[in-house]
Amino acid sequence: MSEAKKKKRQYSAEYIKYGFIQSRTNPSSPMCLICQKTFSNEAMKPSRLLDHFNKMHSDMKDKDVTYFQNMEKKYVAQPTLSTLFSAASKQDNDGLRASYNISLLIAKTGKPHTIGEDLILPAIKEVITTVLHKPAADIIRKIPLSNSSVQRRIDEMAENIEESLCNHLKTCQFSIQLDESTLPTNEALLLSYVRFIKNEKICQELLFARNLETNTKGETIFNTLEKFCDEKQINLKNIMSIATDGAPAMTGRHKGFIAYLKNKVPDVLAVHCVIHRQHLVAKNLSERLHTSLHYVIRAVNKIRSNSLNDRLFSQLCVANDEDFNRLLLHTEVRWLSKGTCLTRFYNLFDSVIEFPKNKDTGLRDNLITSKNDISYLTDLYKLFNDVNLQLQGDDLNLIKTKTVVSTFVAKLQLYKRNIGRREFNNFPNLAAASFINDDLVVYCQHLENLHNDFKERFQDILNMDIPDWVLDPFSNVSTAESSQLEEQLLELTTNEEIKFKFKNGYQEFWLQKPIMELYPSLWSIVQRFLIAFPSSYLSERGFSAVATLLTKKRNRLLVTERGDLRLFLSKFEPDINKLVNAHQVHPSH
Image (cartoon, rainbow, N blue to C red; front, side, top):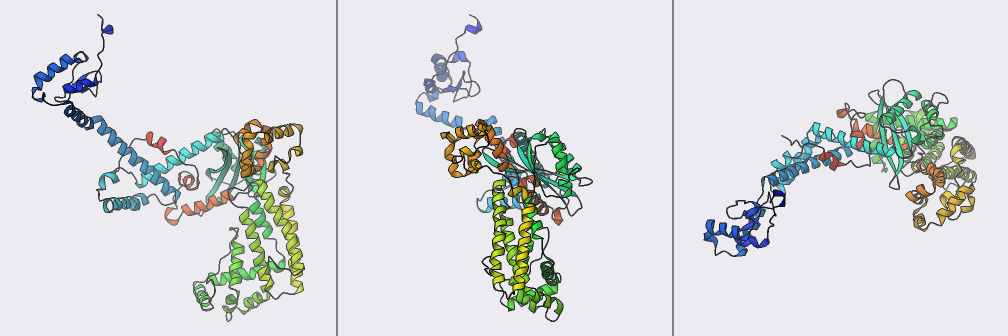
């Protein structure tokens, strides 16, 4: 009989009474539990097994099956060489995974990489030895957290997030916002953010941070964006809108960044940052109000710029039982600075007047004369700050932006009428001041100028046509602009599977994936209102993050080349399992 036709014997559970089990390495062969000798498959029959048992282990004839079953359990529980290596490998992988997770925490909090070895590992050791009462050396050794290890982990995770982001941007339309700023080291830094839809939600992520090696002209900025998209194989035509700060390098008619982008993407929607526009309107002051504001800034600088004056003023505020004991500096680059500076100054006005009594009588007299103007500006800039805060945030779209801007423009006319009638509901500080009619005339004229300036600067937002069916498709079917849109709108409003989400708001309703696939004409109109950036708020926040990372002790950190900035700002989570599986473990020494 040929080898191929030989019958292969099968193990039976009854063989345990002879002291035999299946071999670990070859289940088709029997193994004696007593001497741990393995036999061929041909010996897998009761007579051969019993013969070996009687000849070699006759002293165990009196043992029952339970005895041999217990022997089998002890044998199976014994670690083998392969299981020992497997357990050690798993421990090393767990240590590597912990290294990635801790490095991610370090990056998320913007801490220096040396904190891993200087603080975190000693803290882990203290917890293990003090609380768990176990030796910590073996565990600490398996968690690489040296300065270079943390840096590599951060770079790998940032690269993983960037790869995931770019792969998604290849397949969808998105909007971007760009802004550039000069770092303390005189480097020109360009930041770009993207907004897109993923898993029926609007997501916002840092696209890139790049140094502008020479100038900051529109062509240079466009070439930087184009080079990045070419490297990542992202089609520029996927860009549906762009938000910038309105600088000439961005909005220049012929050589601005937007002009270069429109040569490649003619239909791109360009948006001038609404927060910058609001900030420009807030600067619109008459000569009298500008002079009054200048007196406030002079007084603040006089006190805050001198350490002795600052301490003396603080003591004076304490003696006068003021709610605050320090003035706030004003800076143009911070949107809310002017309003907060004026509010604090007016709260401490009496102490400010008392402080320079014998030092600068001219400034003191000017402040007293301008008190009504200061009270009006304090109230007005508080209203400006409220609007500014409404125009910030991650969930702002063009529809909400138009609502905020239109409301404030209408309110400016209301404020003017109320002040003319001596009704000061929104101007509590002015209401408490001793004003005259000439003061009110100046303030009414200023509000009128603000109203006209707002209408001019926000003309595109105020005139933006938002179809009624975008906000409520179920009540405005007949308002569709064409028969094709009306037909798709009818189909949509009768689709029982998607209509239930409308109770959560129009945005969540339109972001449903079936709508994008089944009603493309409707979606092509809606997506611009939802995805377009109304401002460059995220880029400005990104520059604040850069300032947080680049401290005096970390001023050599290359934010454009390292992954710290991306992990600090990103809401995406890196695929740590993928990184661990692709990594060769090197425990700490």
